[in-house]
Image 1 (tube, rainbow, N blue to C red):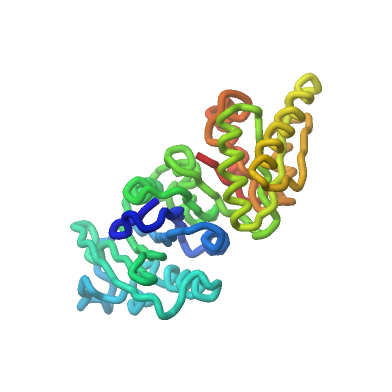
Image 2: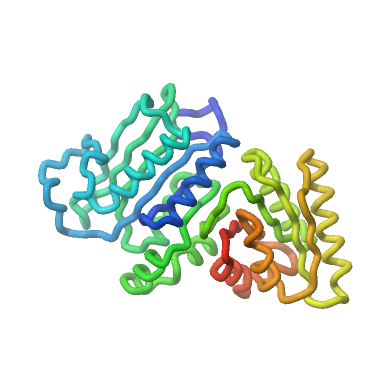
Length: 317
């Protein structure tokens, strides 16, 4: 994908990392840094806050060209973004000598408005930090996804957003709403330990195989080992589950990517997937398919995996 002003130069994978100041959010940012080292990526780090008609004290002389990182703790959320900037520099994703330009968008409902810092390397935008206003956090994330054609959303599975959204906006949980409505892949970061590999759930459908191809390629680029799991509801379906993992394994190995492990088991799918999950960095599920997990996803089972898993979950589109 090509950023504005960069047409015809390079196609880049666009990652949106949503921060609320929680540890889970920063774990997600670390994973984005890992991914950006394996793919040509453009990373946006986003903090959303609710509208406030009062300008924070000490920012009365705010100008559209202001360096938002100088506001420090005076502006809500800026400290989270500043910590993110320092982390990306520490991880080698950013360099201190990159050119930075600041942007401001005025809003009627918030005197601080929307603000951003865009870091460029050789005139090409690489990392953007955004401190924006949204009356509804999930809707704000989805608007960012649509506006900038994001490929992957990463957000922390923290109670902070969940409780704030339910209490303040009477909206469904942020992660569930974003995962259900985003046109791109969504990663919910929870105790995300980088380097333990991807556990890809397969059901034999073509949609699931598309997901297998996409995630295997992404995992290989960031040097994450790939494993496969398929769960049958009963013993009669076990042979199909075994066939599903063997089919997916053949697809991945046909791409020149090794498969670390395959699992075919009998049981309640959500339980079996969740229990297998902690041995891996990510549980990977398809957003839709012709059978199996697709029916469960529509009925809420994939959301149960996302919400109840001990570790992180990636929903692939």
